[in-house]
Length: 356
Image 1 (cartoon, one colour):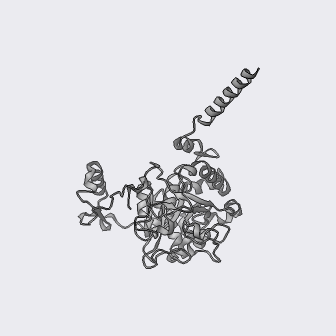
Image 2 (cartoon, rainbow, N blue to C red):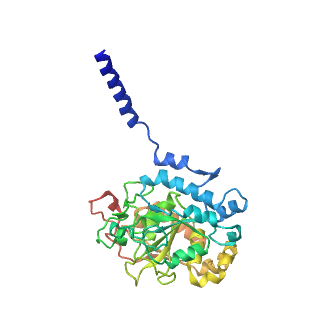
Image 3 (spheres, one colour):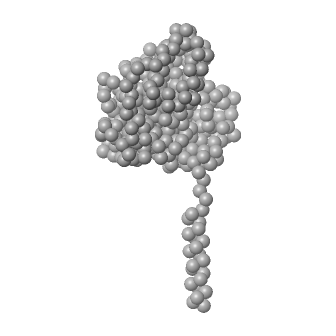
């Protein structure tokens, strides 16, 4: 009967409508669901831990790349931290030989900011649609050094377009190529910039380490806002050729990582002065003890403390004081810096909550 047919169609439409609004997994749920890699918790991995898993034959470089690609596929649509996957990443991981296992970055998947020139089918566009499908004829020295140390280039990370050159008030982490990068902890808040995607990807465990650049706060800002380690090298310490510049006299390469040890491991692989010692990096504890660990009494720590900044959070101020006291370092407290208005919001975009 005609009315029965109409009722059937109504019921079918209701069922279809309901399926469209079924329960979707949250970012936290997806993180947990895709947190295992061949029975190993892929979250919070360190370079040392991965190399131990490799040596125990519980994991291999191709398997680790596969797991990170799976996480990127399901998690990054909410984060917009990765612009492009290296189509050769899996093959590069498979080509690594056991003879290469002595290398300090053997089989470590690394994302690089979109302003580093790479020699493959990935664009080097500094986040801009205007430079999309531009393929350099040579790759950045940093990329060569990473590969020499055994790393696998996983892909390109999102960034503030042209490193924020478009405007003084440019939104941090936004580009025409990748849209808005989102803070991993609060999606509506600023991820910082301009190395936004690199920081968010590391924080979300979409890679172990990422490479960025800094002219003025572009490494340390995103690192702070996404809860990871950011290490900005001194200007000129790491070669910047093959990198789309913002201010060549001030641009510097930086590392985003989950630990200070991992950041220094990558830094040493990128510092030309350390190339003769690159093999010894696998014994990293001894290496760092000799090269990177000054006696606490000789280390100087400066704390910026203004009434409208750190002291707004007494608990944080007290915790820092206690930590520094236990470390027995030469503390310079209350360094005077004019940082007023640095965190003012222009109110035009939810991601402008931080102007780092």
